[in-house]
Image (cartoon, rainbow, N blue to C red; front, side):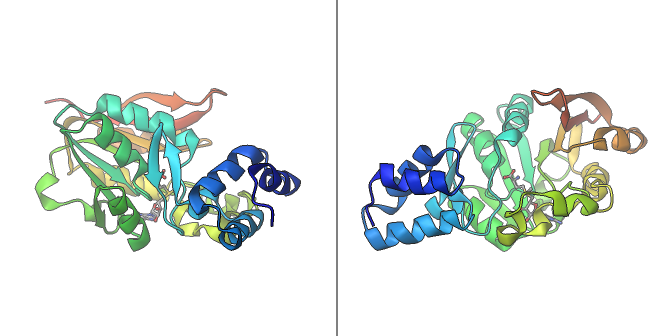
Length: 257
Ligand SMILES: C[S@@+](CC[C@H](N)C(=O)[O-])C[C@H]1O[C@@H](n2cnc3c(N)ncnc32)[C@H](O)[C@@H]1O
């Protein structure tokens, strides 16, 4: 195989990849000039495998993030949530990146708040290993059960991209999603709010007064959660909106003392 970037890009373009030139350059940079390895990498990509798994990294909020095969690839649409979490985190505060996957959000927090305590949590051991490869303090466990005892009651920022896709909508996700990624990253129950509700309930005892909770969501989930947020005593800030004006994340605070 001719391993020039132009030739690889042509094959990727024929395979329907829009950013073919960019992807070809990334593949060559990651795999090197070995023709056999390069051919294997291109075939994986043409088969629909996430680019980040093949090259072993992604860029999130301008930072390089290690992404192991099998671990959710951080998405550009979650970057606004990460930036908002940075804003909310005091210089020496405590933050939890819940359902961290590769730990991309935690990595952004640590980069911009190097004196803060940042802990990344995920139920999937592969995600925890990947977050550790990103140099993070990562813990394995079911939702907030993974948060270290010593931090309970002292958390300033809880941020998460928890599974929030309604179960009936899972078949509508991109064709390749479940050929490569696990439904556990996405499935949020009948209306997508099952895990969000659990997090909001269980977080109360972890958060300090005046703490901020930032959770990605979609569709009408922000409305669906209003009663629960008020019942649990959260103060609700305006949600994060995307460029189309759709709600992308809830922002809530615990009452200041
Ligand atoms: C949509 S991914 C988000 C990953 C990361 N925050 C990001 O944006 O790149 C959701 C993650 O939630 C994790 N997860 C699913 N159920 C969980 C649970 N009960 N407790 C902890 N983590 C869970 C999955 O393993 C997956 O890594």
